[in-house]
Image (tube, rainbow over the protein chains, first blue to last red):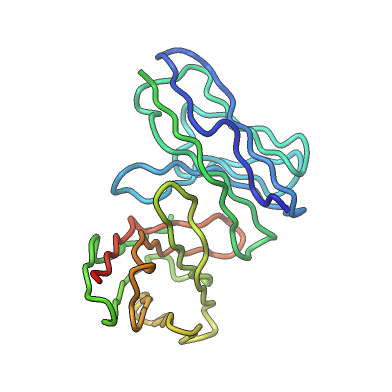
Length: 111
Length: 111
């Protein structure tokens, strides 16, 4: 089992560009999450999904969109990147309210 | 929403000593309290968790205690080793939503 994988690992964008981060899990988990991690602030929830075809906003959803068209995939989109979105992004998955398994992260820099 | 505060932000101990990290939470409905360890360049990994119907849980050198009345929980690491050096995060959840994380504690174990 690969667990939770994230693509890409690193990315540099210019302000105003768009991109999509891909998260995939092979554990048949119902729940998937996107977090961002900034220095001294821990992990903050951006969006999450409790099942295929469903999404919900987290603590810091502005400037991001998500889609969960397949159970194993959770996509995070930035339509018009801003320097404030420079961060490390983590995807996680879980069975209902149990342990969350995290991916290795994507380091995004917006110039 | 839930707010989780974590202290201290940095902790340095000598190898073999004990380390204690403390967290408080605000939402009395929270019932799941995991602790994650994050090594440099990696995603967080669950090391121990506790549910609100239990006051203490132990796994080898790691233990977690929960005081529901005071709304705080703590991580205890005994006989620390250099490989325990990492960033530790506490988190809280009401069970059907994503986790709210503390801001993290950087633990350094001096050989």
